[in-house]
Amino acid sequence: MSTPRLTILDDPDIRKALEQAWHDSQPGIVGGHEEGGFILRDATGTLSVVRWQTGAQDTIIVPPHPNCKIGGNDILATFHTHPNTADEYLQEPSETDRRAMRDDPDLKGRFYEGEFVISQETIYLIAPNGQVSEAGRTREILGDG
Ligand SMILES: [Zn+2]
Image 1: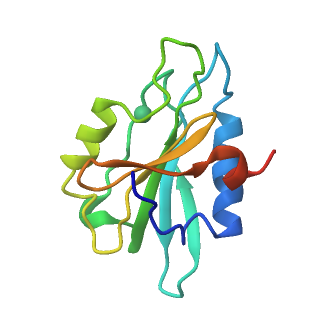
Image 2 (image 1 turned 30 degrees about the vertical axis):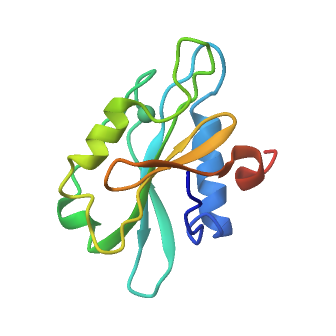
């Protein structure tokens, strides 16, 4: 696994937003649900997060995002949580996650880096071609919260 550039995850506001999403998804052995969102960049270069509607236990619906943009702003990345830590749940990105990424023509923008999958131990990055790498340790990126 290669180490991707972590410019997006270096942004303190983005870290905070991801940490919030992780907490909102109520991680644990029971009762977790997926949270996710878009990481956008506006014309001034400012990054922001637009959250998706709360998902089910192990799935979430991604709102339409034609041409890899939301409200005229470029989508730099997407993310979703894997909050269920029980043995029967995969912590790493699933085959469905990878296929959804690979087959989404609207997540192929010039500036789009991929989808972060936040699990208890590790934050993974699914590249637009469906390849998975590790972006880092969850605790180091999000803090102890
Ligand atoms: Zn997933």
